[in-house]
Length: 333
Image (cartoon, rainbow, N blue to C red; front, side, top):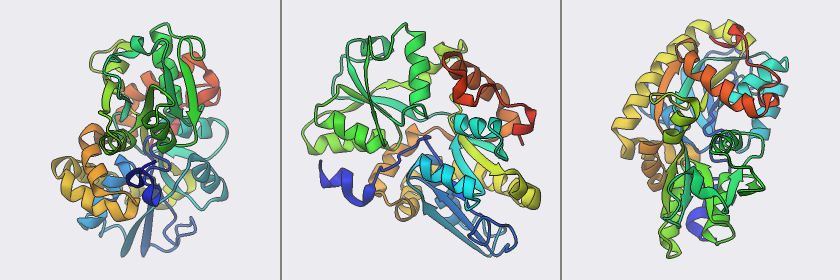
């Protein structure tokens, strides 16, 4: 594998979520007693760029005396932090948040931070749509988690059976999926941004022309039967007690992040430079990923129609993905 793709673990967790960001309690241990420090965590992904740029522009200065943005590396780390209480506020895949809520964890959804950032990347230009995956091999990170749950709904809509019509190789991270594709072990990789951008840039270093052959967001509209549908992949979820202790501050955070998302989309180069250190990734990859990350911040209740469509679609294949049912209205803040 080239140093370009492996240095500093550039894509170790990619977006399990697609995108995930975490804010611990203000004292750094998950509590809310000390309002002087706000630590925001996330993987190297689009929503975390929004967090980092908001901090760089001092947009969060009214929320705490000190704001820090740091990276975490896997969905397992996220779940462990939520369970232990070291993580109180986290951008995570919406299906993960719903599953935790339905299984009794005190997790609520504050907003949605991306309308989808999933792509199939491949050096094979003959793949132009989901049907062309038949007979192909596909690397997919995080079995039974995002993006795997989205892929299975997409394949089912097109009458394709994983394992029979499409060979699926699940990996522990998006970077592993990209590595398999670049070395020729699989035909394509189903990954979120910024792994898709890293695959394209990394392909150039090994003499391969890799491209986003399938825009999953575009094809998702057919799956849900709505030409205007979005793919609300990830959002900011909060432990209920933390929200009760910080409701007004979190409401202001929502507004700050909405402004920051607009700023990121308008200034991808500056946003990428601001986020590169916190995310541990080259700014060039982040800059290339931003236009394809569909970043915007919408309050959970306002986004609920799109979320309901998303949940009903992925649960049709496997209700256990959401913990057995769609979350009730108490899930949405």
